[in-house]
Each structure stands twice: as structure tokens, then as C-alpha cells.
Length: 211
Image 1: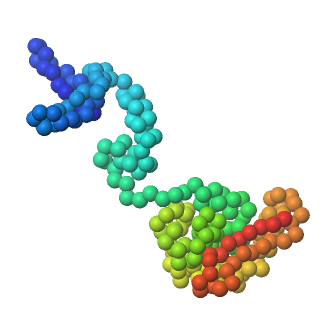
Image 2 (image 1 turned 120 degrees about the horizontal axis):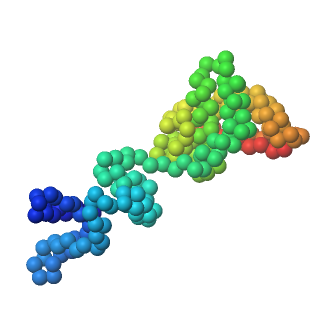
Image 3 (image 1 turned 90 degrees about the horizontal axis):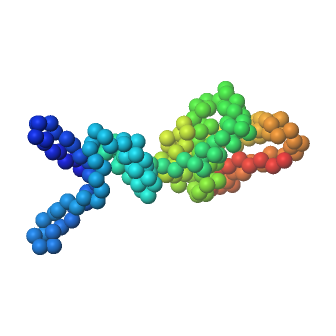
């Protein structure tokens, strides 16, 4: 997009907006602006139509590049992560009150309950979306996915959270059992807890429910 100005005989200056593309002259080799479209006088251009044009073009760009292009250099995209799958699991996690059961079990123990709950959720989300080891989970959360309330954690934090999960297993399972039975109005017979048998090298912990 470029703006050209023309001075009228009465001394007033009128600006015009054009969509142009630079091409090299076949003889001189110098760049020459080729006008693709004239939008008309700048003060009369439909700004809403320009915004729709930008939005239409942005559909063919990656999200980060589209944001940078729309901002005209005013915004720098520093990071971009996936959110959809983890967000949906987070809503199910809340609906089934799994996080609440973990937080209740953490009360009175020598650990940061909310932080441990977030790490356990992150490990569960990784197991559901991209199963791998705990070490891979730390990189996954730090670099690839957005987990609400959990910008990242260490391998040691993952191990401590799993130690707590196993130690409080019966209490957590009981809490989930009754919340699911009440929520779904079902006869819940059993709650399965899936966790790695080999803690140092096993894959991340997960929670699974069955009615």
C-alpha cells in the first residue's frame, strides 16, 4: 500500500491510496512500482473495507505472521503455542472436579497444592495429547502448548507431583468417585488411576474414569 499526493492549483494537497507492487524494469533493472489497484482519495476511502481486505488476506497466513502483518510492525510476536486440546481437557478436568479433589488432598501436606495440581494436569494432558516421558513433558509445556496456570516445570517437580499423587491416591480417587457419581447421576463402580510403574523413566501420570 502506498500513498501519493497531488497539489492542486489552489495550493491544497490531495492524497490517494494505491496497492502497488515493485517490479524490475526489463532494460534498466531498476525497481518500478506497478499499480495493481487504485483506492481513490485517502480521505474518502472506506476504512472498514480496507480492514475486511486485510482480514481476508490474513486467512492465508500463519497466525503469528498474520498478527505481525496486521500490526504493521508495532507488535512483535515472541511466542506461539497450541491451546485447543489442552483447553478442552481443562474444561473436562473442571467439570469432573478432578482438580478440586487433588487440591483437597494437598491440604495439610508440605507442598504447594495449586502448583502440584497444575503439574499433574499438565502431565495428564500430555499423556492424552502427545504421550511421552516426564522429561519430554517439561519441554512440551515450556515450548509447545499453553497450559493455564502452568508456564513450565522441572523434571524434579514432575516427580514430586507424582509422589504426592501416589501417596494421596485413595483420597483423590474417592473425591473423584463421588463428584462423578453426582454429576452424571450414574452408579459409578470404580475409578481407575493410570500411572507409570517405573517412576524415574516411565511416561507421565494420567487419570482415567470408568462408570
